[in-house]
Image (tube, rainbow, N blue to C red; front, side):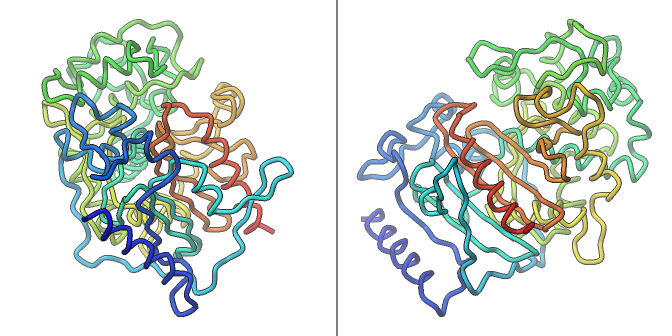
Length: 415
């Protein structure tokens, strides 16, 4: 019954959004999506995930939109005065190309397992779409997009003097790390994931990130500080090589919490979430010790993700208020060493301070998470795109089309 009612509502929304009297950027809801049956859709909806099944394909739709109900999380309080975002009156001609083929937003959604998509420019929503029965009230998880949020908070903490220097070592703030390889690593090298400490992140279930997530995400785990002790073999000097390692952001999260003397969720709420005018509470997963998982698992409604993206596109400002220091934002979104360059740090992106840099090196950058969580930001045009997804593989090659869509949009608005 509920599914039929929701489908009718969604169809009504689709037709309403096509009417001339409704803003082109109004949200459109679809109860289905590509390969919905493979993702678990049945007559009763999508299956409900738990702590044992949340990573399995038939449960991804559910788990990725309520991870904070499956695992412990701390509230990130919303604004008491949510900031409105305008909506486009006329639909913009948003097309892109893959090879010689011209493609559209509708086609992109029909091919890709996207749960939510927002495209916005100059504080105006151009497109807002949802699939698989997801609503604009669902808190969609970030996975590793949270890493960039940690970086922005570190920039604020440095501006406020809570973090004195990026050349300080992690053990200067977290005494329990003293004598460990991560403890001896300067914050600057942790920000660029260039610590030189051995860590394998391949998402095969037996790698180091799996050990980290089991020890921190699960209520039966041991918590961040204790688990970091098993990653204590140095294979390169700090600053010599880049290797993507979630453990490095976990260290940064511990440093940040110690430096500011409060939970990361509270600091995020006070310094960013409330000032950007977030309309809904967000949440951040915590480990058994109560520490937020710096490397992942910040959950928010799609429009609040867009508000965060627009903050970054506007140089860290909301109105007349500078939230993220502009100098930090520039520093965090540039390549500092040859080993961090596009094509070297990864096959495509370069790496800044917990932030991915486009190979054009034109100021545009990305927040990325596994299974297709992506935020793209182009400060030059104040263009942003938020894309949440339930891709079947952690590192799904299908994300190439998401990048193609973004590059097409960016080219359109730069010309």
